[in-house]
Image 1 (cartoon, one colour):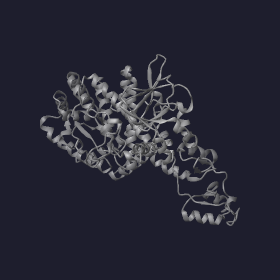
Image 2: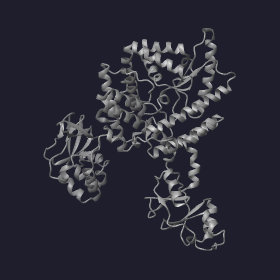
Image 3: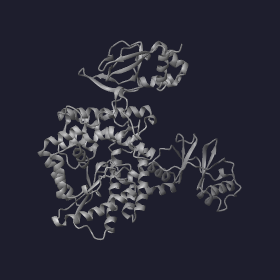
Image 4: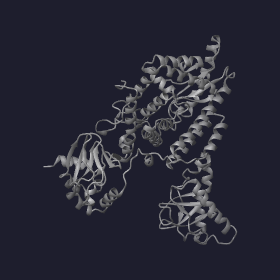
Length: 640
């Protein structure tokens, strides 16, 4: 009779290394002797100094904290094992006691793998052996400590100028290359280049590059009559070929070309002339790629005379974003550059729309970008959130003035929609009369929201607290901000309600650390990374910043970094939140670029185990900061 328990265990194990490297028969042999262990939260699996067990372990459900003992005798978490992670390998390699603690971080189910059964199989499978040795020898990492950030986002503190950011983009590679063997005649090679419309041809033997011939070589060696067209192409080729791997930057390529006085670089599998050709880089292609230089794009935005041209520039900005992410440029720098490009686009559209109005604006006004653009976090084309505030006018002029700005706002929002920023489904846009108000009306509106807040008012407030002026008179937005902070100071209860609202989306993990997914609708079974992960951190950063009356900082990561300065006791938590907010934004952006959408809804089936673990590590920050808010504002339960 088939052992169904062993079969289920084998089905689980085969999804994770090193078990994925075993044959099905070997897996079943191991699975028959696996012990299934249920452990409550906070229980030890083993302790430092304890004799090695007869098993090592893999997490089936739950999470395990691996802890070292510091100089004060206190346990410090150095790594966390999630679903599919193995730990307790020491008995496989050394007859020594355990050097760390392993405790359950929550209710967990472990599979205990017998060493006596597994070791002979591992010794006869080199790939399994290598995996285990590397796992045993590698250091554990704590993603929440300052020195170990960088799982989803690199955060190097480099001061890039705009042009330098361009030069750090990946170089444009042409993958459709033309190759010939060395005995090919010059005439044949020239005809082939002409037919394929290329400026160079690679000379290869067994797909290995041994030389390159360009248009310049034909001019120097053939057109001058020095060599016959029936001569072998190897007589005029440049050899050896300068080779790089595919991750070469524009700056590296330019320096290499200048150093070697060449205008082509060969891209091979490992960056040496000893492996297969993967593509070619030309000086011409680099020059063409300068159209994606941020400074060039900025000039193009300012010169654009139509919405159609602005849309083309926006497409190039998306290409620039893809290049930066591919080359792992720090998200802090990416966000700043893209905020400026987005902001310049909004300014240009407003300028153009004012030109199309019959008369200039009757009074000074300010265009406010809300939401992700207001927080300098808008990298993808998401829906637009904006508002307009204009100078106070006499009562008899109010409707006429408002009508002018509503007409202007409709023109602006329409053009923003054309270039890719969809209309807000909730109509939180300046074209809505509710969000196109005089300064006095806005002050009264915020006072109502703060003094007598209901659930809807709290939600509206949370959106409008993240604004940045994109166009117009900064005095108007500053005066409005001063009024808001004064009101909050007078009505402390509002912050408590805002804090409770920040807890409306609890930790994104359910029972046994499973992702909480949508249960119905068109996104059924998808993970909503905005609602369940990004928004909780955004809400937490906002309410804590308002508590400290932090002004002129709306970016979530920067808010937490400021909080780390203001609260040294919680510095590590706030820096972990800052890291997680950038990591989650970067993850969403990559998903959006891959699927050509907003990146909000993620199919978990498409994620690797590594991606899932990285996301879960970010989720710990959400849980911890929400616990802090719950305690600080004395909130007994989440809002419905």
